[in-house]
Length: 163
Image (cartoon, rainbow, N blue to C red; front, side, top):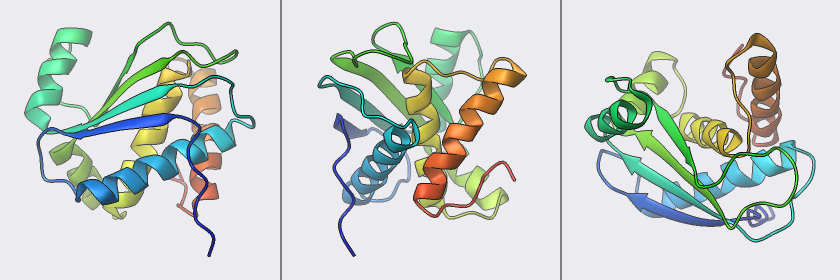
C-alpha cells in the first residue's frame, strides 16, 4: 500500500499533558487528518504554512476556554487562528494552533463506540477547518462544515461521525 502523501503544511506537534498515544502515532494521525482535510476542500492552497497541534489535558483546555472564550468548562478541541481566517487565497505563514483535551476526547470516543484514533483525526480536521475560516454557528454553516468533514473522513475510510 502506498504511503499517504505529505500534508501541504508543516506540522509542529506538542504533547503537553494527558494520556495520549505516543508522539509518532499522533504525528501520523495529524498528518493524515491535514492531508484529508485539504483534499476534501478540493485544492491545495498556495503558500508555505505551519500548523501547531497541542495535545493536553482537560484542566489546561478548561483554562484556555475560560481565558479566550469566557466559557469556564472543558471542551474536546479549540482552534486559535494566527491570522484572520479565510476560506480562499494563499495560506498565511502560520495557520494557528489546534488544542485537544485528553480526557474529553477519550471519553467521547468510548461513549460513541469509536476508535480513539478516528476521533482524534476527526477533531483535528474540525479544528483545521476552523483555522481555514469554516464555522458552525448557523445551520447552513454547520451543514457546509460537516459535509467537508464527512468527505475528509471518507477519504480515510472513517465512518460518518454525524450519522
